[in-house]
Image (cartoon, rainbow, N blue to C red; front, side, top):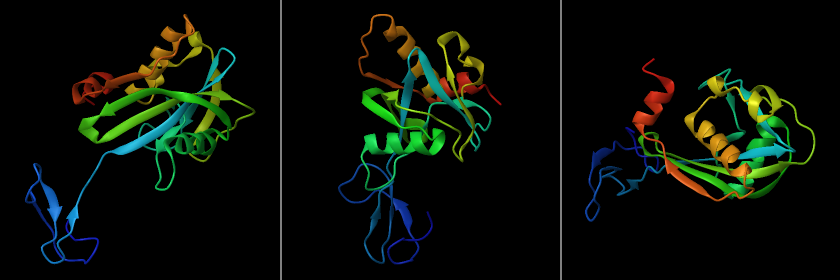
Length: 185
């Protein structure tokens, strides 16, 4: 950040009085510009024994498979964001059953919130998807999943499905985890 979004003056990066970490400060108008993590909300849409996945039509990870998810917008709840993203990416409506995975990615300032959901009708590729499809567990394209958050959510689901109990899973993905997932390329 170079300029204040309130008055347009140059900002500096420093620790404000009474704070414990650096922020962008505007000496002209006194604004402190807080930068907070972004929430990614989505669903794990289930239809019978199959899961709905979307092949990404956009970067990052274009051409790889993911659950329908994306950045939360202002003035919406996490459930609304998850349902909206499912509609935008898969043209699918879902009944949302509850938060299933909450995954922190502090190294990229994101928090993933994936909700278990039941597919309530048809589906088709939205503008951010090349294609969408239902997969049985043995058909999941594990080597073509877009993100470690998606793999982790799917692995939790299949482990939990055996006993029919779906607890909330809270975990972290570190920079090292991402490196192992994506490789050094």
